Amino acid sequence: MKRIWVSLLLSACMLMSTVNMSWASICEGRFTPCLKNQAPNGVSQEITYRIQKGDTLWAIARYYGVNMETLMMINRLDEKSILTVGKLLQIPGTNACVHIVKRGETLWQIASNYGIRLDELQRLNRDKQADKLQVGERLSLPARARPIASTNTPSRGLTRGSGLFSWPIMGTITSAYGWRKSGFHHGLDIAGKVGDPIRAAANGNVEQAGCQPIYGQTIILEHGDGKKTVYAHLEKIYVKKGQEVKRGKIIGTVGTSGRTTGPHLHFEIRAGDETINPLQLLR
Image (tube, rainbow, N blue to C red):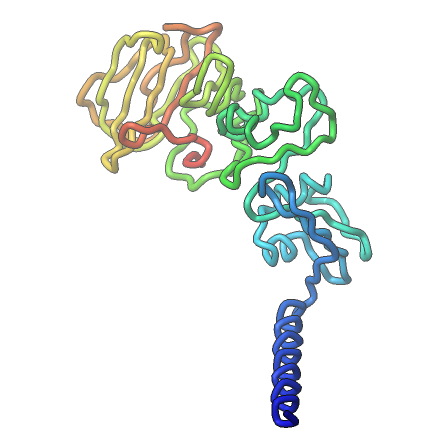
């Protein structure tokens, strides 16, 4: 019997040692969470972190594996914000992003700005009333969600993307890529004046040049890597089918042809049968 008790005691000591080692490895390093809350439906697990001396938003975001834009948004910070030692930061779980509702925003606008489906946004936020959103309210977003553009955002100076394509015109983005009331918008609408020159976004060959339903006077360039660019609602077309063009060549002018409410360029990037958010590939 004595041997049995000795064996049990040794086993208990070994177990406690293992637990202590595991806990030490969890707490190792300077980032120690203060509190965890499981959100409904498993959408997001929030961690409350207390800022320590020497912390940066970039380091905190990297350590927890979260998007830094989301981290700033949920804590109402920006690039110029100064971190205060001892202040608590809310850190979203890695399975979701969070959007803080601003004055005048609707669910449809938010879904459109992130390039996600309205029904998907509603499904993640069943506890929210679409017609009674409160300023400062948090909306859960899918992990893939990223801000793509805001209505009336100037295209000049945007630095997002990999830079595979050049901007065909410089103007104001009046309609972003993604869902809107009339359906999914497969490109960017960039405002301009009638007659403004439109340039080829990259080297390519003219696949189509002529009038198309809804799009009006349209040019489609094929770029040899499976990608195509589309330029719609033109006033004039300066190229013809089969012609080779170089990046920056003027291929047409801004117009109001097709179904449109004013002069602008509808610009798309296609890969096979799919469209790509142009902001991901424009310089």
